[in-house]
Image (cartoon, rainbow, N blue to C red):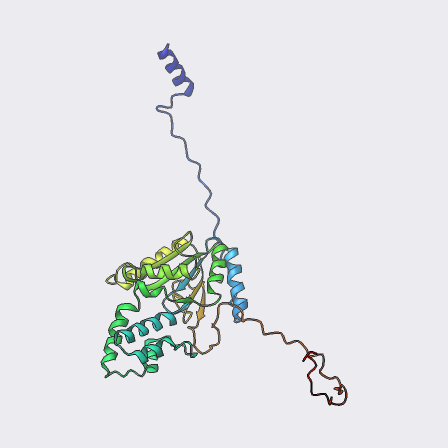
Amino acid sequence: MTRRLFIFVFLASGCQCGSAPVEKTSEAPPPPVKEVTWPALNGDPDKARQQILERIKKVENSVVIVHLDDQVLMDRLPRLQRIFTEVMYEAKRKPLMEKAMRSSDHGLKLRSPAAFLKYLDIKEEDPLHKLVQRRLKERLFSDAYLSDDEQRPGSSEYLTELHRSGAHLVYLSSLDFVRSGVGLVRALRVNGYPALGARAHLMMRYEESDPPAAASKAQEETITRLGPVAAIFSKDGKLLNETFPKAYGVCVLEPGTEAQEGCWSRWSPPPPAPRVEPNPGVDKEIRPLGPPSENPTPLDAGP
């Protein structure tokens, strides 16, 4: 019975042994991708931000690249202030330590080691200068100090909006992961940026000994596979402009830099000017209430 059932199933299914192969129907080629010509980026930063956001919403899997090394997103002033304060404490230079601690309280924005050295009046021939240089080499780009950086106002909100609209965020850095990776990730998360989640990528060399050219090539290939690059934020707006010529190259000035035409100095609109209420008494004739009182007792003196 089992043999008969097998033969029945075999014959019912049909034996195609020796039959001519079935010709494959040729599939129609996919339609060509329509090239989109995007208008030039608006010179007004507020309108340009909206223009980039609209482009992200129109093109699926758009990529936004941000350079982390040039204070495009975060201000390194707190990091430098901490390092110089610690070095002055180590050198037992209490007056200089207090001066470094209070530099920002005095309205000073010292965002480079050279500016701090000049402010503290530390000459090159001073033995303290060598100690400062040694500690800067050890600490400036280490994990323990990178997370001291503070976000530039409006930057995390804007990048979060781009990310929620479907963009891939790629954070580029020339630093290496072994020394600086954890600190950069912590700095991004502490300051509210999308980091190491879906569509958020940190790209950097693994070790300091890795050739920068090879690392850059691998990063560019990975970015190309993610999707079309819509915008690249860097200090001069020229980062990867030859590799991704159709992307908007956005120049974002470092904090404290003089304004330049075509560059952003802020990530959000300026705060509204305080509203001045009109004084209803202006333009009205001022009349005395009466002759001065001869009673020296104040009205609220009580009985």
